[in-house]
Structure formats: structure tokens, C-alpha cells
Amino acid sequence: MKRLVHAELLLGKKVLALNGQSIGRLEEIWAKMDRGQFFVSEFLVGSYAVLERLAAWTIGRAVLRVLGAKRDEGYRIRWDQLDLSDPERPRLRCSVDELMPLKDAQFPA
Image (cartoon, rainbow, N blue to C red; front, side, top):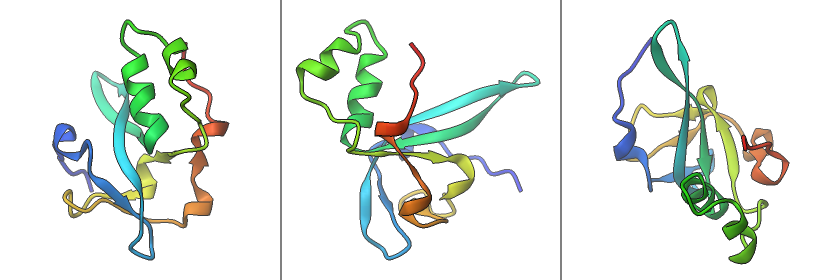
């Protein structure tokens, strides 16, 4: 079932694990185009994710190292691993152990 959620309203929301604990704030949403429409592919959560979003602008990824950002502070969440039935309280559909830590992620240049 397709559902329309305003992405801008999700940014900054705490993402809850299955046990109700926060794993960090949703800081970035990645989308892919398919047949002329954009679909969310994954979400970035955590302190490094917000710096990754800023680095995508003109300041560059070098700023991340200067600021001491650590990739082990956050996760990549596939679109199907996040329950958005209540956009005010995004919740994982899987255990935190099933998420890809940002430290293992490959980011586009």
C-alpha cells in the first residue's frame, strides 16, 4: 500500500526502536527516481547523518573530519525498515542489529 507522507515533517523526528528507545533523529531522506517518480530508498539517522546532510552542500565532506564527526554515530535505514504509520513517532520494523551503521556506509562523492 502506497502512502503519502510529507518528508519535511519527518526531519528531526526521533526514531524509536522496537523497545521504544530512541536511536537518534531522522536527519536525511534519500530517494531514487523510477519511471518518472521519486521513491524513498533509505533514511539516515543520528549525529553523523546531520553532518552528512550539511556536507552535501558546498562546504564539503572535509568539514566532517574537522568537526570530529564519527560515522559510528548513526544508521542507514532502508525504506521498508521504518514504520511511518504515525509520522510523529517513526518506529523501526526491525531490530537495531539489522540496521547498517553509518560507519559501514558508502556515501556518494
